Amino acid sequence: MSWVRRLLIAAPAVIFVSSWPFLEDPAATSDALAAVTDAATGLILIAAGLIAADRRPSGRTGPLLVVAGYLWYVGDLFFVFPDASIVPLLSFAFRGYYDIVIAFLILSFPAGRLQTTAQRIVIAALIAAYAARSLGFLLMAVHGQVYPPNGTPNPFLLFPDAPAELLDVWVTALKAVLIALVAILAVVRWGRASTPTRRVLTPVLAGGLIWALMSAMYKMGPLARFQFDVQFPPWQDATWWSIPDYLLRGSAAPVGFLIGALLLRTARTAVVDLVSGFSDQPVRRNLQASLIKVLRDPALVVIYPDNEGWTDADGRPFTYPHPGDERVATPIESDGRTVAIILHDASLEEDPGLVGAVAAAARLAIDNERLSSALEAQLAEVRDSRVRIVEGADAERRRIERDLHDGAQQRLVAIAISLRMLGDSLGPKASPEVAHEIDAASTELHAAIEELRELARGLDPPLLREAGLGVAIEALAERMHIPVKLDLRLDERLERTVETTCYFVVAEALANVAKHADAKTVSVKLWRTSDMLFVKVQDDGRGGADPAGGSGLRGLTDRVAAIGGQLAISEAGDGGTLLEAQIPCA
Image (cartoon, rainbow, N blue to C red):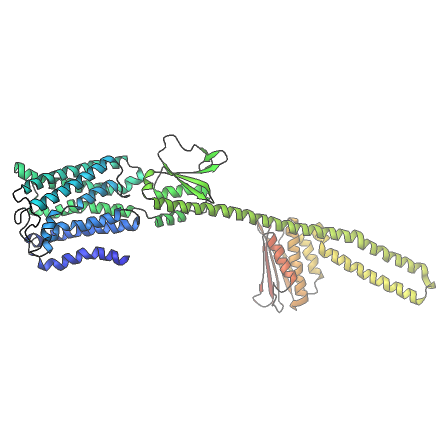
């Protein structure tokens, strides 16, 4: 619709500029600055209307301001259209109707609705006065007497001898009184308005009062001249008066509406401001302050349901509804239940789109926080369950190690002792075949015992359990067939799960170096901060380790992640493989 906006603005300007070379009336050409000021007034009204329509698409204010802008030019049409036309007559008959629209908007801005009976009566009387003046003018106006001689004779003339000028004078004076009443009602309305409403109404009231004062004086002038032969206001016919007249009487109210329209909040802007106002603070604590800032209502309160009634953002009990409380309640509903209520100034109801958009944004924020809290709880439970799984696996390994040590290993040792005793008892009497079989069985049995001990040591290294992480890693390094450079900065024992995880990370890394890296040296570095244990294992082998390629590294990655840590494998800067792990140890 941008082309419609451009057309609405451009049309009057094009018409008046294009008609300027053809104007013959001295009033339009002798004071060009006054004529330009007059033409600009309508454009200001139209611009204010377009801005108000953009801010409140569903409201009446914008379209009415545009209509007022075009009505402003009705009284100037006799300058533009040629002679022998009925347009000059109609221009004089229907000029000034923009006053009705301006009066209505001063009493109804920004919602576009009159709120009191007195307002409705005054506006209805103003409409009746203008309609009576137009009807009387059409029926009584004589060509060349009551209106300029350009144009055709009055085709509607029924009462050529009637006092058309006297009727016009008194009806115009009545309009002045009604406009003064509009000003009084506007002041009363501003005095009763809330703080958010006054902010928008103040420029409208200021411009409206100037318009009303100047219009009332201007419209009382004919009566003063006709009845008392007095020039009122005294400076009305002064040459310097034309420009202030247009600026004050014509442009003050449009400028006030323009400023008021600029102060209006769009629903889109309010939602953006509201969402951006949610910081890292909890929404329940931050929502009320954000709504007060966005809606500019310092008395706004957000309340929440609980088991016993209502509470405010700080959890204090809140009585709802308050006796005599004039605030309007806008509920915030989610999944068919009320999750909060916004208590705000009643003036905000004048723009239901704004309040509805803000309430929807608040609902999304509350739902987002609720879902985020639920998700965080689920993630915490998953993390706790993973830790429990790791701890359970460690406990199971310790149980298996004890069972192997106290069960199978002891039985094998007993069998080995029995075989040795059997061989000793047979002595030289044993045949060579029997002695050979006994020796072979003893050898295999000792090998099985060593393998079982090595297996048990891998399940739950006793050295790690008894002497700590540093000593256990030193033992790992001693069993390597290549030099291992150790840099262990550990001042105290760590929690068992942390030590076990770190031990297996280093053990798996060293095992992979021994099996696959073809390295000449390997370094192991451990250090810790207040809440994190860092592990770094680097070799000078051929590199190419793939963390997803073997079950050992994949298992280590899962194990480290289970307690909130991270494990990464990459190519070292000078060749070889670099394994780094971060394990929480707070």
